[in-house]
Amino acid sequence: MGKKEESENQVKYYRLEEVQQHNSCKSTWLIIHNKIYDVTKFLEEHPGGEEVLGEQAGGDATESFEDVGHSTDAREMTSTYLIGELHPEDRPKIQRPRETFITTASETSSWWTNWVIPGIAAIIVTLMYRLYMTEE
View 1 (cartoon, rainbow, N blue to C red):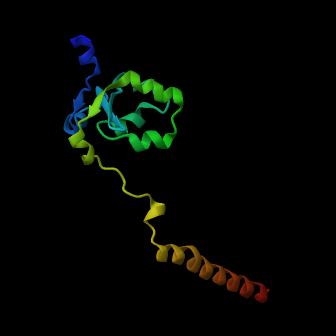
View 2 (cartoon, rainbow, N blue to C red; view 1 turned 135 degrees about the vertical axis):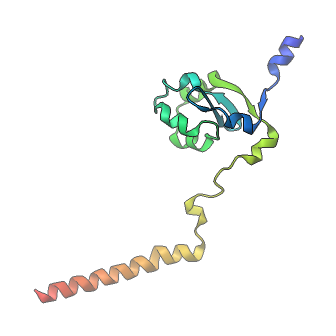
View 3 (cartoon, helix red, strand yellow; view 1 turned 30 degrees about the vertical axis):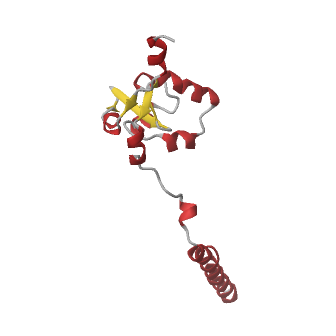
């Protein structure tokens, strides 16, 4: 177990501010699950187009990466571009959505918007239809 093996096992940490500076087509870094990827050389090869990666450049792309549903091959390919990890102190600084739209609705507003409003709309449509049919 020489020094070379020990240095290979050490993780290179990057600060969030440093990652944020790599947000151009000349240097494009992404954060996915707190790991840092330099995808600059992959921009032109990305099946979704380089614009997709450009929009995420210098920031956290975890949600976008997972939403697309990348294949196992694509996930394995990410290791090619891995350069390090986000410094543990900066991980809480990443702004991720706390809740989705579905979970933000409270019980009261959900009941109101899901039943009462459509019910009133149905009654109005029914009355208008009957009024229209009786005039003919």
